[in-house]
Amino acid sequence: MSTETLEFQAEARQLLQLMVHSIYSNKDVFLRELISNASDALDKRRLAGLTDERLRADDLHIGIEADKDARTLTVRDNGIGMSREDVVGLIGTIARSGTAETLRRLRESKESAELIGQFGVGFYSTFMVADHVTLLTRRAGEETGTRWESDGEGTYTIETVEDAPEGTSVTVHLRPKDEEDALYDYTDEWKIREIVKRYSDFISFPIRMGEEALNSMKALWARPRSEVKDEEYREFYRHVTHDWTDPLETIRMRAEGTFEYEALLFIPSRAPHDLHQRDGRHGVQLYVKRVFIMEDSRELLPDHLRFVKGVVDAADLSLNISREILQQDRHIQLIRRRLAKKVLSTVKDLMANDAEKYRTFWREFGATVKEGLLGGAEDPKAILDVASFASTASEEPTGLADYVARMKDGQDKIYFMTGESRAQVENSPHLEAFRAKGYEVLLLTDPVDEIWVETVPGYDGKEFRSVARGAVDLPAEEVSEERSGAYAPLLTWLNEVLTDVKDVRLTTRLTSSPACLVSDADGLTPTLEKMYKAMGQEVPPVRRILELNPEHPLVGGLKAAHDERAGDPALAETAELLYGTALLAEGGDLADPARFARLLADRLARTV
Image 1: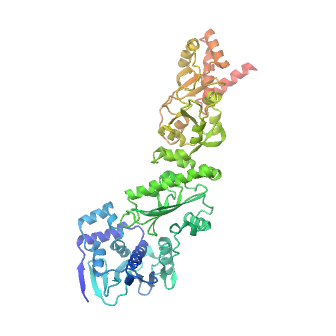
Image 2: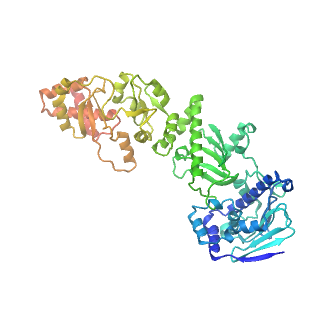
Image 3: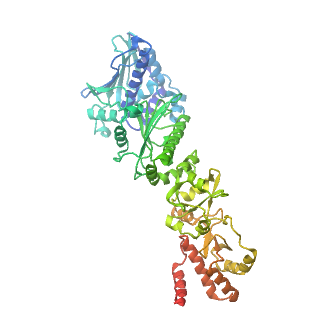
């Protein structure tokens, strides 16, 4: 036998301390890492056996043995095993390469992708719970094996042995229990079962303790669709989400080529209670080669699709050294884009083929999906394609493609109005001329609508245009110069009397109302102003434009009265009432409701 005793270099000891005390946030992952290494070894032997009969083996499996008296936990496999050179090279990734550069890279967690999948990296997590570790291994097809031992401190030994079985076994000599771990011990059968169930349930090889297999090996996402019953998908959804209602839709994905992954995603049938909570459980579960890595991986789906649940299983991902924190690399971004595209295309199919399911989806998640229009979506059109909105043309919501198909000849804009409710917007004076001329207007009542319409210019080449901003641009006769001249003294006087408005002008926008308030083309809407104030943001006073309908008897009467008795104080009160009714008609708040009520009561008293 050839035994070699080596010392850890000073920097290697620092590296080991970093791994044990800083990289891993949960000690349970040491068993996950050992099982993952064993699964990799079994995979390699299975593949090697396809081309070399000598390396074929029956009953490939992982075994776990716990000895409470000796306080040891052993994980063994009959996989490909390692030669002496493999042990030195793989475990020695840390033991031999104790350089300042390696230490710096791991601390920064920017270039650790090449270390993932190497046996030594996860193997060293055992020293979180062990005061001594023994590894015994023999490469399949070779006659001698290797024993590696260390206490993780000053030295380690590598020894050649003659009687090692094929495969690898790692024996963890557990530290004495401390107060932190007083509730359980890693030799407890229930604790071993819990860790295997949580992290390694879908490993494709049996994980046995005695004769019993601890894992189900039922990775539904890896099985052909024809072999999986709908009830199995529903049961898996309940297992993943703890939601006891059935999912609205199930989505399967498989990507092959240079970067392989599988995904099994679910769209819930109702919004979770924590959908809009910052610390809510959002994201999908992440597996790497069927090994559980992360519960709520938010990096794999954009935030506006955070309601989607399920699993993503990657053949390889760039993770940090502990596999617990995803790095923002091109592989993750690729998965993110493809998953988002698949989810939205599935919703689009529902929109076209299953109206009831689509209505349920949009009712529960429409406002959340539209958050992607604020800048989080790489393809805003994909969101607009699946969006639907209330409309003056129908009691049912309409999609933008249908709106465009119904546009009048010569119409080049998609008209909309925002507000707090459909009833408020639908009864707004701003819609009168559009209704009279048969133009459809979208009624946007979600708070997010106030913001995204500022950032999205249009759809299908048609510009979005608010009917409550700027001058009306409908084909119509403009206010004649003669009428404008006749009303000029009244408009000048109103601009002097009504100090809260930016301007007073005549309009063709109105058909039955005497007046309305409009914002500048680039000004804040009243609803957006309220939202900013509700969030505690200071908003400078917004002065808006009062538009008058010269065809309305009240406006005509006010003009005639002004022409006759321009200095009458009662006219100023009438002007104040006119402005107040326009403000109330759009759901605004009066600065002095009591004064408005008193003026109105006085006027009503004169008519009875």
